[in-house]
Length: 142
Image (tube, rainbow, N blue to C red; front, side, top):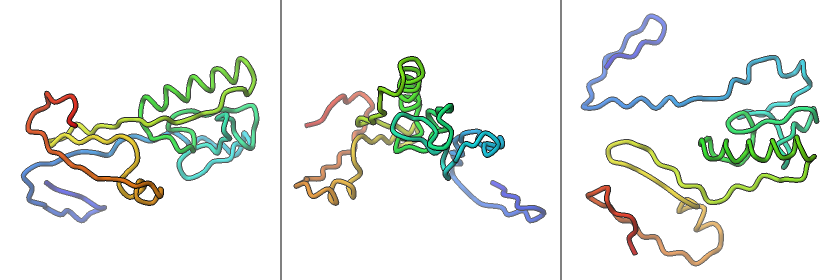
């Protein structure tokens, strides 16, 4: 594999190369001209997904600076809240349930709920179990 930074080219040896650049919201569009405040990861919104600086603007999904993960199901849930609030006034607040996430790599990885660190910091009495399954056919493991 080769990496280039300006004119410098570096060669790396690898058995596998994984591209995980992802995507991000298109926020470089002069938001300040519309009096739309932004944070590092999106439009600064309130609990109704309404811009805190311009009440005529709502943001959802990756474009909104929320606690939601940058996942399609989260963006879909956000869009339902925004649509409801546009049609009925600010009556619906965003709530993020426990959302599963998967990475389609080898090996496959997935998560749901809190991280181990978050669970330990929550003050709950927790037990950590880890299991590696050699097949993709397993639905549940008690």
